[in-house]
Length: 401
Ligand SMILES: [Zn+2]
Image 1 (tube, rainbow, N blue to C red):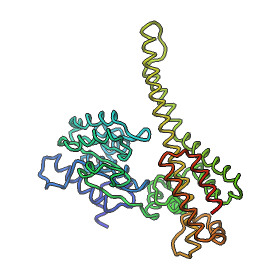
Image 2: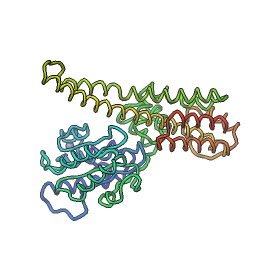
Image 3: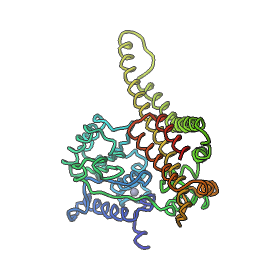
Image 4: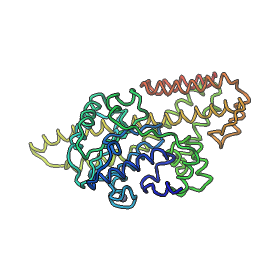
């Protein structure tokens, strides 16, 4: 237990990732010695890191914690201004890139790379954190590679991606990075953090951790947000609702509408605030020739913002739909486990009666076909098949079995 006590405060929220935290804490201690001008053996600290792990494993949480540990004079105390501003995304020497749309473009990346080459204003490190390195365009990826290949002394790149596979990160970038693999945290680790950090009561924390399948952010939402709970219940009611073909189309329609509503709720407030800010910055009103020309430029900027916002909303809708599909897949998985008498815990612990009723009715082969249909639908959505078409096809297969 003494080793745990030595881990700096900022890593407390990196849930269920003891190995990764050990590596990062050691590297940030070495980074502190470099800043102090002390000799450090080669390899103790390096300037490019790749955080990999499934969605919800906390890639960007781990990367932010590491960035804070690098900027903090006490190696990530979690209490000072450097730690707070880094974790909050406002530190002057930590540039965080989160994708606005489906991919990160070359212009964003060039701006970043320029910024990365300047020396840190606070005298420690210039950190560039790319939250979804797998969503870089090829041109952006090339711009990033140049910077990673020729880093300045005090620049650190922190890249996050689902895996180190060439589909996610180019082989050349990967070869320049030290990989920090994160795993899906255990349900008990997720429940602990919900109870400790978010003050969720123990029963709710355990339930949310189980049904969120190791996704920390989703577990927190389910524990605290009644709308998120209602959406989950609606998704889990789908299998029982499929009594005929027309019910399949209704279910598809409802699922699409729910994912649109969820995406709108998640992005609309931000979109309105961004537009108001932009309009204020551009200065509304004014007459005469100069003002007319300025208005034309203004319209272009507003159009550009609207394009980005639309792309972000599309992405949010797809993410919402994907979460619904993951819940559905887990339902059929639970049914299969019960049917086969496997001694493993259920995901959807709170609807065990529904799971058992389905298991009594369906052959294992047909349950498996349903699971495969859900996975096929996810792949189709990834490949940009229209959501309605993919989901309707899914519902028909789930009905027929
Ligand atoms: Zn600190």
